Length: 422
Image (tube, rainbow, N blue to C red; front, side, top):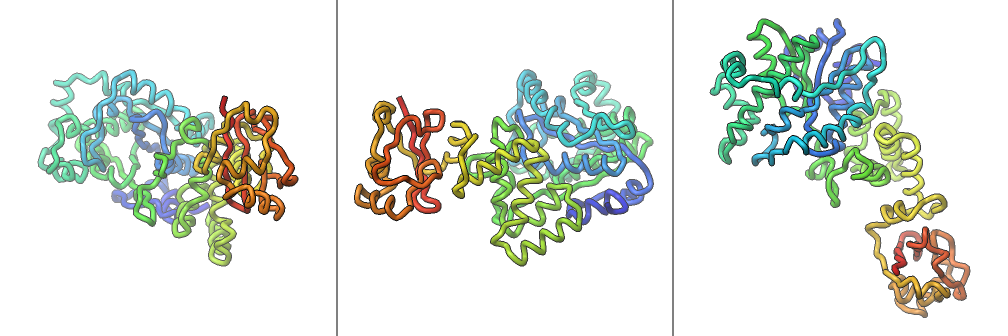
């Protein structure tokens, strides 16, 4: 463990900028800090893990983390990093989203520890009580429009246009910081580098109100190939297992680009310098063994979904390399093999048993019956990852997983999913 949380964040490449005196503050005092989370969806995504882990890292160093769910600011919309106006959510939508993400925010934080328990707050609790006239008189007067126009979050939107609603977001976020400063002695706000303007607007407001507060921002995570982090061909990678299964979550991490895997181990796990250095050395010496990738996928999947889900994800992954399918249900098989070729076959055709030679030829796994027989005789055909017993083998509904799927394989990786339909 390093001497201070800032040193910890620095070696993990998680410090983009901070205000003066932050190094001394976090080294010499035990402070309260907060990070805000946007409830515009009913689940957080993998990009949210950086701020979630940041709060958890601070807590491990004895500081008090506050996770703020933006039930109030979520009704306004943050213009940072966006080229167009957000769609405003209804109160019912926001309430639904907040309930969903509360549990996710609690995954990595300890709310029971006696010394420095984490706190979870919703800014709707104070923002919805504000009186407009009082707010403009007491808070609005502290903000220069000229200064606001120079903030990146606003400046980047001026050509395309920005509504007064989103323009006012900075005031509300600043007021959040002031409220937490007054009510929870919160002296530090952290966030992504795109939040620097909003966060420092809050430190300025607190200074004008006679206090002193600080800002710390981490770099936004990027991918080496230029595509957006946390996105795949099938969409965002969510923390909710019902939106992104633990298997697909595990696959996202294990498929990390070689150029990024060590960086991701630093940013997304609690592994220490020694452990990551060993993985970096192993990766350099034998990248084909993918030890760093496997450890990354294991650590993050376990953090988010737990040991059981990790075990199931690893078992599902092994199936792709010829592992046993015992214990896997139809839903898991459908998830694992969703992107491989498939063929529908009527259930009644399978009831009396159907020749494996015919199945291979009709499904296209083999180019024809002759190719099917040759492949079977050569030991290259597998049914549910078990080598075919021979050209006389028949397949029936009893071979199907939960009566729905039969996995065919030609060679090492030539998978084909047979779907039994009625």
